[in-house]
Length: 254
Image (cartoon, rainbow, N blue to C red; front, side):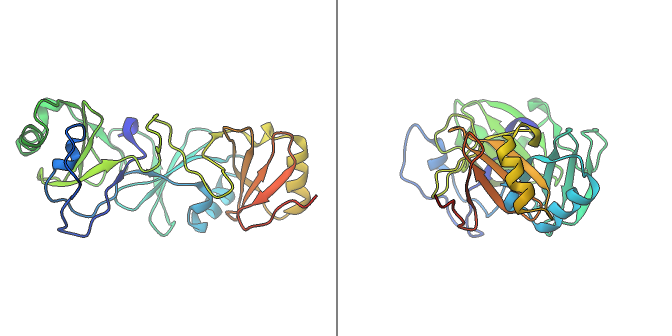
């Protein structure tokens, strides 16, 4: 479901119990048993399988990756800078294009709440009394993804059996923006066209990595730039375009 992507299911051993201290403000703590499962989660472009980066580099030479996600069935969904969405399996093999056609092979479809399986609505009534179902969808792998009024996300199988609870792993501060930080304080930023990078940064990349191309670029909240090259290397620049570091530990020396 496009509106509630970037959500990761609590990782549990199959058959393990969701055990947290009781909290009236968090009904998830009162949930029964759930199984290991992962829903759609945002993935850094540099962490994608190299096969995906190679495919995009070879087949979409003028485009970059604007957004990347891992779906709950292990597939990767890649959104290119022109809006095209590509689907790959867990190993990076190309599967097809998600054209958002309701007859497409990779489509998620919205479902009217009143048409949900009785087992799902009964589960919500019993475990979330007083909380309504805000929206629902059928995922392309046959699972139901349910969003409640309090933004809790529940996953059910095709028979209405509860599978797990959605947790915002990437949204650390709860503001709806999905970010991550690393030891150098780089966080998730807004995708930009590589042409928007400072000239100094573009020159550095051309001189230092002549055999590579830019596959993703973004500007971070503190004004830094993060550039992902076609081999997955992430290169960081300050607001003026001065080289700062790479994700392999290389730093600028004054």
